[in-house]
Image (tube, helix red, strand yellow):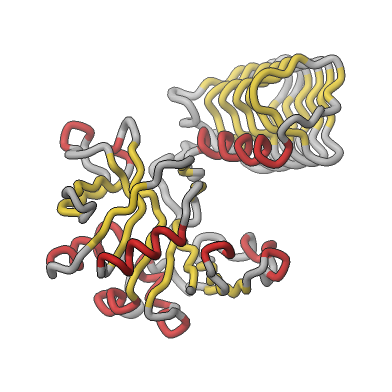
Length: 320
């Protein structure tokens, strides 16, 4: 963002206020961060409308759960060159039914857009990548104080008025970290970029694929594949495959596949867990077997059914 000339960032914290503030004022990143709070959920477009008076005539908005390798400056330049009302980053995926699907003409103008169609109804494999350049005036269509969704409500209105909604092709890395499997991939991608070639202090461990250890973490006598063990966690005599172990966890003599452990989890000896997300502080007794129906669809702490279709109603709004 800083490289694109963005100086001020407004974080819409309606989803979970109290967590994002750890970023501080952004001075260490070369930007200025301020925060916006909602008394009740406003939706993605409603969150932008709430800070209308704090936005420039042209601004950048990004979904808070997107991890992307994108040249924002080039997206801004395309937006200005085409005279679009909205420019939307697009990326190809195998299954577009989980996202907003876009169809473009030869010049990249979006001619059709549908939010989360059935797989057989998807008219393209290009999906909304969640990074936009917008003219502030489009927010005049958003009712003040009401829940209003950007993709479902605002984009169709702008297109129906004949205004240009431009597609910007994103060719680099893109992940939706609201999906647990992408959250693990994103952690490993950052680790690969920041710590490439580093040797980790994993004692008597077989490590394959991407791997990361946080400060004070311990991994011993274990087999690890494509996993991250964060600060202060301990993994002993275990096998981990595509696992994110968050801060302060303990895993002893267990097998975990496609798992995210929230902070402070305790996994007893002899457990076999797959395709699950465990909330902060979850304790699993020794010898327990837990298997989700699908990868990352299953229990979240105390075996509460996890809704993987949920998307936080927060947007990160970038001022240029």
